[in-house]
Image (cartoon, rainbow, N blue to C red; front, side, top):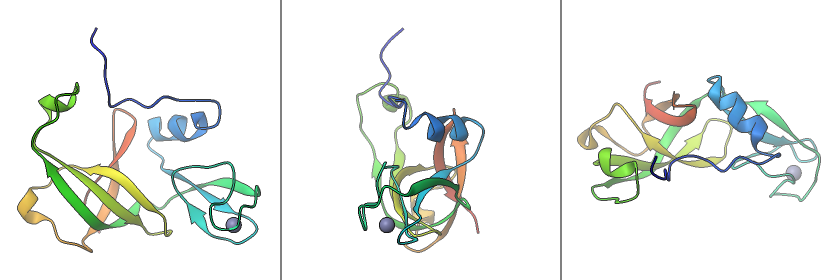
Length: 130
Ligand SMILES: [Zn+2]
């Protein structure tokens, strides 16, 4: 079995996130002190440094901020997926998230287009859709 570079290194803190993703739910973290959401998950709020942060189910809605079509990636299993679209999306709740776009052609993409979360092998990706 060859190494894979597309699987997360799950630890005690992020296990909740990955377990939810495996069930088809995208989680974010929200601060109880300032009310702002953040992503990737942290044990403190990156806006006000409060440790009063908790998990919240995200709506799964996002808009496309920017993207790049990857034509070459020699790390397994990406070589079998090229070309693919690496993207940064703005979640409806506010945080910006790095991800991959699926079910789309490069010519179909436009900044601000609506996206919906989808899951591939328990990892969140996004596809076009309002
Ligand atoms: Zn905060």
